[in-house]
Structures are given as C-alpha cells and as structure tokens.
Image (tube, rainbow, N blue to C red; front, top):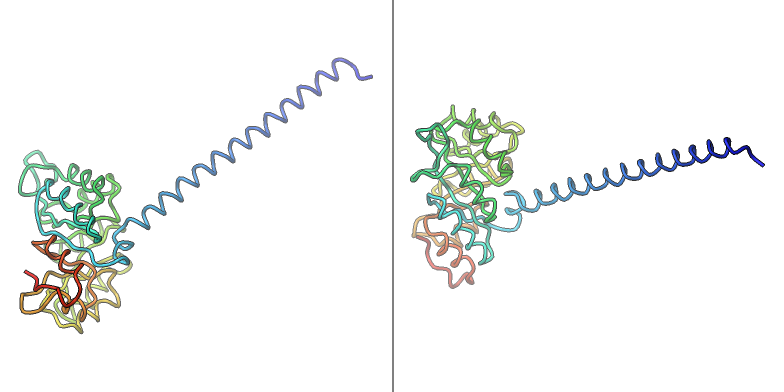
Length: 258
C-alpha cells in the first residue's frame, strides 16, 4: 500500500501531464485552423484574381468613370463574362487619392469593387504609385487591379511600388516588346497594344506578358474576327454590354463592334 503523500504526488504529476497533453492538442488544433484559413485565402486569391479569370475567357473592361459604374459593371458578369472598369486617378485637395471625375476617394472605389467582385484598371496620372499601391494592398485588391502608368518614369515607379500588382506597359513595336519584358523583369505585367497593331506583334508579346490588353477595333472588322487572329485577354470598350452580348452570339450573328 502506497503512502498517502506519495499517492497525492502521483495524482498531481498525472494531472500536470494530462494538462500538458491537452495544451499540445489545443495548440495543434489552433495551428491546423490557421493553416486552413491560410489555404482558403490562397485558394480564393487563385480563383478570383485577374489571371484566374483570364483563363476562363476574355475580360471586358468598361472605359468609364465614377463609383456608380463600378457597381454597374458587376452586372456584366451575369451574362457570363468577367468585368473590369477603367478609372482615372487624381490627387484631391486634402491630399487623398481620388477618382475623377467626382469626389470619390480611391479607398471608397476599391471597397465597392471588392464587394461587387469587379476588377479595376487604374490610370495613375499624377497620383503617387506608392500611395495607390498602399490603398490597393489595404483593400486586399492586389490581384484584382492593373496599374496604367502615364509615361516611362511612372512605369518604373509603378513597378517598384508593389511587386504583386500588375502593370500595363504600352507596346507599339518589337523593340517595345523586348524593352517591356526587360523592364518588368519578374514583375507581372500586361502588354497594352493598339487595336491597329499587327497580329504578329500580338503573338510576340503573348509569349512573355502575363496579359494582353487592347481596345475594341474599328467597325471595319468584326470583334469575333479580330479576336480570332489575336491572343487578347482584356478588351477595353465604351459599350461593355453591347460587346459582351455580341460575343455571346453565334459567329454568324455577331454584329460589328462600335
């Protein structure tokens, strides 16, 4: 028969061991929960970002301004195609980055776009790329936004502002294509081509750029024929609904674009 005090010591020891095991189990469970949340977040990013949507088809970008159009653009996706809105940025009197025309702040527009599942193409103009990148990161929109710099200097600043946000670089020749690839390095970038560029130039930049952006062609060529001869990921238009509707029709019924 054991001594009463020895029994008490053994009980305390067992209790301590059990508590330690419980704490370990709790820690493991907490770690698994955190890992699960992280995996879900990564999965959401991969399935909702620009590159993921490009793999599902052409992105129609509405060339409009204002927060109202950001919300309206979400209705385009109901037809079966993803949507994007192109907006111009400016510096407001109080030092904040604003969307022109109007007085809406970039932060407000980003919040609206995130909740309406809309991509944004942002013309930087005179806005500070670092401040814009900060607002985009804060809104968790880094994989849902494309920066459009105003010039070469602005392009360099945009590439340095955030390593994850895609930057649109204008390409008008083979030399431009090589320079854009060299300038971007490992940074994700989109080649912005004129609709009058040759199909061969589109094919050339397609090898290096993550995305190819252009605008709707003239009425002399149907949009369907235009897309058939060029690898295009994002098309900018003033009439997104009409373009989306026409692309949803059989080839024989596609009308000429605006």
